[in-house]
Length: 493
Image (cartoon, rainbow, N blue to C red; front, side, top):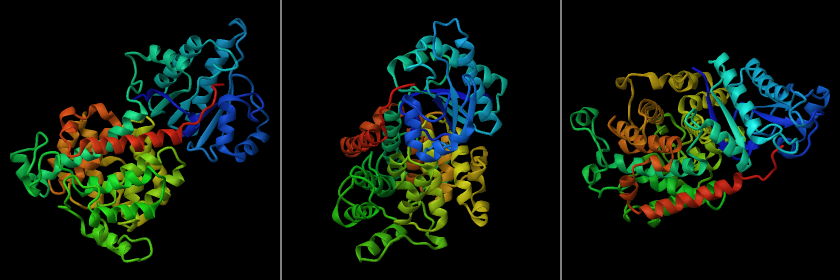
């Protein structure tokens, strides 16, 4: 199946893709606009790699590593200066896109982000340039339907975005859900999913098959009112509150203690559910033990770190993959320090990074697996096989567990998100798997909220949340901080 074309506003230097395309000058030694921004973000290593390439003719392309960029590679192409349209500019501009995609295909690169080549100081009329770019990309996708997962058109200026939007209208998944909506959807979606699952926690699948959950209800297992969220959301909200002030794992842990023993981050003032591994880690922190505070034995692989990770995953989504891995490992180890829990958390953060960049679920899974595989030892790779090869989403429901084991939780959430087209249907399917229903629904809710955006979460469920205004306010504060940190101003080249 041919890859999808996505349209998004933003800074191309922050894209977590296989390759970004640089609208370079013929020297390949850096310049203004996008070219200068990419060289600044990549660091001096990019310039050093470009020097021996001997420049690049107009309409051609050359490839380098990504260096300090989130993208693994940079494809440098030289667009034409617009001289009125009679000097072969259209053919040269089309060649830039064609040659860039050809290089990507030759190197097995499946996710590519393009700027609007030649639309800055080179003066190419925006509407004409957008039409040429889109036509050439579509031709490549038809000619090589299995070569690419996603081609993203990254727009800094409103004029370029509007031109592409008009051309894509009704024809392609033009990323109608913006980054703000995805961030809010993921953060709020976790809490809503948690609240959906709380009343049926520990129910057997056979029981739920006879009387399935179909809406947000109350009471049940813990006797709580409708809309009540559990420790899953409390710890996620504590993490979000900490990240609003910056990344500080010790502060995160201090907020966990404030939840467990100080009355903070609770829906109704009481703690009615807490995992043993999590509570033991928090008490080790309280008693002055050195980090990591999480248990590291085989039986410490509950889903207690995965369930609260979404705020961290959102906060790091535009950082270098090495940073995403390191921080996901570290934040997991606050309560769950076994390598398997850390690997599942790292996979989740890489998945969310790809989703927030506009990838669909299966493309995001492939990207997460490619990045994580070098970190996975052989014994763990065998255990994580269905996750790493993506086959879990094709499994029969009977082969999916909703237990409190971290791998079961992650697999079940991916399965539910992949097999159900809406936020509501996926979250209900996750809860109806039985067992640890609140956490499976929470993780599914985080994934689907990021995929579909805040407005995809049923309004009655959002309005029915305990302390709903507090949840939305905290999610909004973290979202605005993430957007502020990731916004870099530069002019289109």
